[in-house]
Image (tube, rainbow, N blue to C red; front, side, top):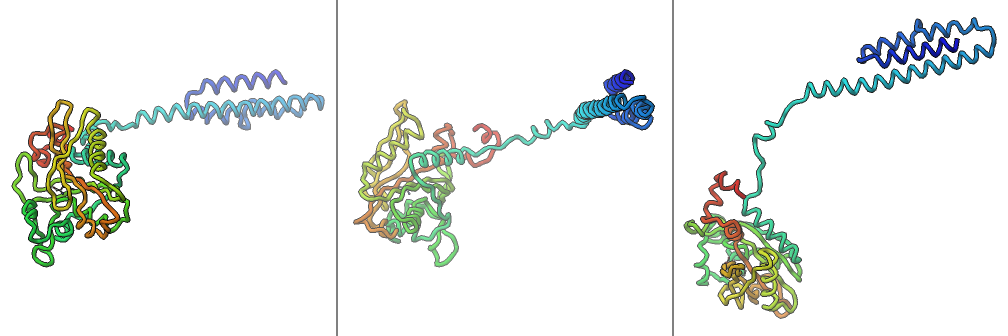
Length: 333
Ligand code: PHE
């Protein structure tokens, strides 16, 4: 009987191995393990065996054979299942290549790129970033910055006025300097902040001027800040932003809100000087407008154009090109 059991088991395992579909396996399940299967028939014959020991031995062999067949079936079912799924998956796969390729991937505008790089460099130097409103009061944009209504420097800022409140009391900010005042009013010193943003000047646009452009302002307020700190910060920024071969210089100048004031230039490795922006020691009247005591605190400020940086960095001939949104231009950067 043991011989018959082993033979039935081997035959069953062979037919499982030959099965090539899940359907065939389903059929084999009944054929090999059902009531009329060879193993089941052998089991029915157990009672006819002469001795208890023989019954026991054959019974064990039958149980082993049945679980072995069950196991082989399950294994084969899993294998064929995976194969059938793979066939189905590849048959039903959708080719979306064309769909993904069509719209193209966007990227940041060169002015945004310059803005972000500037922030990165200043954050690396220990500055925090602040922003202020684009629509300002005359007080923040001019008066608090030491430009009372009669001040001649106001005429340097061709101002857009907003029809709101008293005539002439609301403006589109002409520079980012009003954010200095807002920061001083809201943050207790020491202050090490940069303030990027959009500014507006009522002037005719040409290759080097825009009516809407971007500036980044820097403000440092602490105890015992001197002009040497200003010059050192401009130099550290120049090397961090442009690279080790670049250097900077300050040239005496005038701004109502700083005293002394300077323009700062950078020198390229080729030796050309490029005018970058304005800076100076914060005027005592400006500190007072910001609610700070000039006897206790001193500081410096600087400001320059972001669009300008993008223009120089990428050798753009005409700044207006940066805003016509011609995709052939934008795509290049
Ligand atoms: N606000 C000045 C401008 O727009 C630049 C500047 C900022 C100068 C800070 C000095 C200090 O021209």
